[in-house]
Length: 566
Image (cartoon, rainbow, N blue to C red; front, side, top):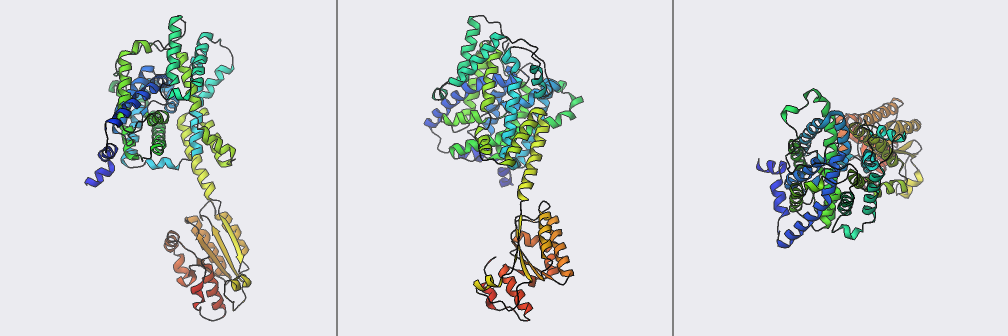
């Protein structure tokens, strides 16, 4: 029982391993890394709060609580969680449709789902989604974030829309006049972030410097541009989830968005943990990480925050800054808490245009550029199709539908790829048998070997049946299944049909090269008992020798023992 609990809830073993040999020098490195991560997370938390359709304060509260709760309980000590761009793209649509209560309830439900994924160790399910689909999904989210910030970039207000394409259509009418001051501040923010030297960014992030410069300029010159507005100096916001304001009338409608949030949260967290783990040579305990993500997202709505997940960018900053344990996440949360309690009046004067500039650059950088270049440069057609389809679906549909399209497409691509089986039919050559050291006693002209390469299932049986049509002129047919990793009921049916057809005209079928799973399936189907074990051999050579002796009216000799595995 104790071992079962440790498997299901492995936090203590994770902590013992993480802090084994922990000393003062590592503590210092973790604290400094936490300060660096906080500097990166502060502008992003404010920006993603706005991008989620809620408030900057909600984004800040989310980052603080996620750092404490998820970081403290997670299965990867080096991981940093908080509001992310991908999640913001889901939430903006949800907020427009159901309001803040809808965001909170969907986040709570998603937290429960993610927690259960961890409890039942189902995190490995995300490994079945191809990288091309993930890249397409990420690029679609990047477009949603950028399009969603056009109002703030241009200093205009076009109103909410159901999806990014409808939002974009508002701008294509060109019936608005940009606020040139706001646009100038956006461009200045973007330029600073782009030209900010990478080596400086390791010490002080360009996004934070850009916000400081732009905010200072707006205050000094009294520029008339929209700003963030009041930020409460607390982590318990007035606008938060309360039992009294749960939208029970729309509760059922929120299950599908909650599934989207849960799937996205699990995917982002596990991908981030895998990337971070490779950077430092440590393995994430995925079920514990998912349980922590679930608990965090269950708690956060009651404080007024938005759904959180692990962030690859902030996690990599933590690792590159020397951080190795969850102390980094906790320190980063403490710094953000101090900022909320002390700097709230200053943060409230940050121009919305500056946050839009930060998000524009972040959206560009969040694309999986290396993966995109890889699939297009090498012209992987199925991967290109999956990437483009998923990206378009993400932008054109809501995120729930996009995830369904992406997962469904993943399954279709998988089926298509493994269905590329081959069937090679080769008549027995007496010269080839002679070169292998066996002199045939009868003519081999009526013996054929059919080599099946790849799985024999519903996606490949048409090819199998077409190839088997060429075998009607042979008396003995040998099916070599050595390279068949699996069968399904359709494949079993195709083999049964072949046996019936060959035997109906007086011929015989032999099977060779059966691996254990294939043999078990053929036994369960009754094929082996119907054929008889004397029709099953390890290699095609053995089967040919046995058939030759059978035709000659003799028993096989020790020549079979020398048979090659074919």
